[in-house]
Length: 365
Image (cartoon, rainbow, N blue to C red; front, side, top):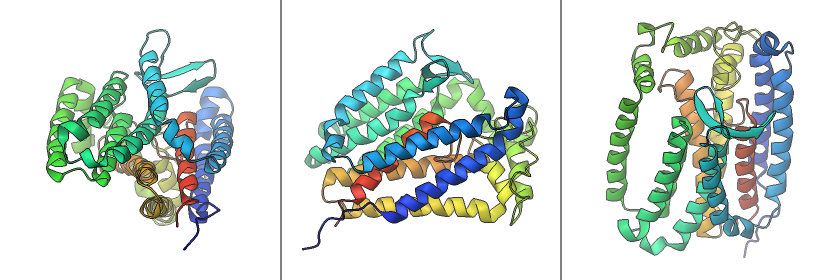
């Protein structure tokens, strides 16, 4: 009988470390001019990102060696804690307001984004519930209503911040997990129709979202307003060509593209490293997701399989949305690129999820 692996998936480790390394380099390149203009220190964001990366990688390898039973044990308490933080962040004077969204909790320079950690908490909860209630998933009311209600409650709290991008990733990841757990297609089709109607309602309820849709369809209709970010992003991606302008040679990062080290870091990467650099990053994401799904297929139990599916889906959906936004394929949602964009909560959360994947990869047969 084949034995369990004793070491984590080496391909996953290499893909993650390459993405994190590229991310630190690109955060420095994309933020140097912006940081010097605002803080007088071109390394301001790069130093912080390097610290976030070090903490995240340490946690990743620590979690990779943890007892897998902890994931089951903490699935429900972890999600309850995430819900509590989502409520606390909405309290005026407690939650920190940034870019029009009350999404942060913190003291001084240290802050966290509860919605980011809710994505991972939701994945663990769904993996446990769907694995323990597999026989009920054919029934909407007996099997699917509870997890869908929990997802809906989390999405509602995130939208009160508001943060449509993070909410979309959370819902998308949850639906993928429910599908892989064996839910009926007619139920999923009904959910899809309800999702389209709900999305339309959310867009119509907020004028700035309508402006983003209009800008997505024709950004040059309002080049200095709603379409500004998309146009500047395309001005970065287009001139990159095959090989790019060269590392550090971006033009758009010089205060043309707003905060190029966060949501639009892929634009700067494409401008400086060209199609080959951008294609390499996309290939690394594809390899990571492929190996994650391979872990899910070979997992020894249903909980582990769904947990691997959830982490892989979260990374894939977030990367697809971000790259789609910066290339003009999707409307602007304000979501970061996993492993690459600047931000402590996002990077540490994603590396924590990667640690779970590595842990599960040690147990495949």
